[in-house]
Length: 159
Image (tube, rainbow, N blue to C red; front, side, top):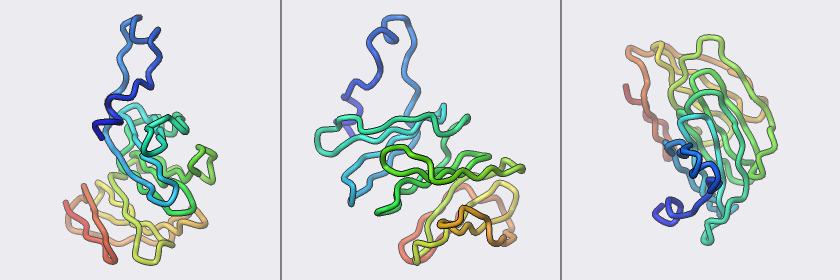
């Protein structure tokens, strides 16, 4: 991560004009593609080749802060903001984009099969998304909002 922070990916002319880069809020790593991913408060997602940390791709994926993102080996990156889920390949090409009218998504985790994502919400609900189709296939009520999830074969959701 220290190498990533030292890499200048922001144009020098923008820095001299007083525009500072947006803060990085998330990082992820794709061990198959050997890419480090970053996401910013403003919705930008960038990938960097490891170990050189040369920028591979960068795109404005979301209009708001990226809340969570997960690398899918051989597929790309699944990212979520409060109102949007996107799946893109490592070069930034969009596979699909799914918009949520409730705009209450907070986090996501991939289930043990790699075919479904569990999406946490601030509305006392978890949603299940079929990753290959890009569609919500079910919901489950919870007693509290979900703010983070982790999974290694099982998904643990925390409020």
